[in-house]
Length: 173
Image 1: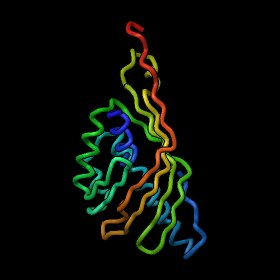
Image 2 (image 1 turned 30 degrees about the vertical axis):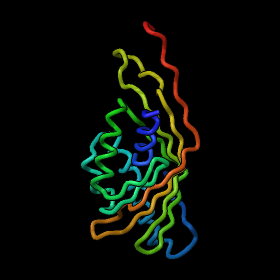
Image 3 (image 1 turned 120 degrees about the vertical axis):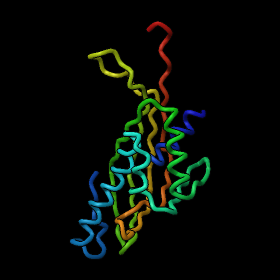
């Protein structure tokens, strides 16, 4: 269960194409939607690359992350918890789909499906790695705020839609 809790935390902290919401100036929002989609991609790629210090350029200082296990507030605390949770994984990949971005001035709401595949990077030379030990699919919702330094994620929430966990292979196989 501890592995599932850690994996879910990383999935929440760990979005694509953008769609026009149909309101406001589509030309101005087009660039913002692209920037916001890239922000979500950077959010996950920094975690996959284990470059947690780069989350400073992605998360707002007062970011709030809500999970079924509690609420974490503040960029430094979120980064510390994410880094610690990632120690329980060998490799994680995030597949982000169905990204929708709605921009309203200096605020934005983003919704995406995120599948997190967690597994081992250990494979014999020339062979594919083993199948993921765990897969978690979530519907994620983010809020972002435009700052003097660009867009930053200010709120993260998600609902686990399903999770699967592989059975360990028998010893010697």
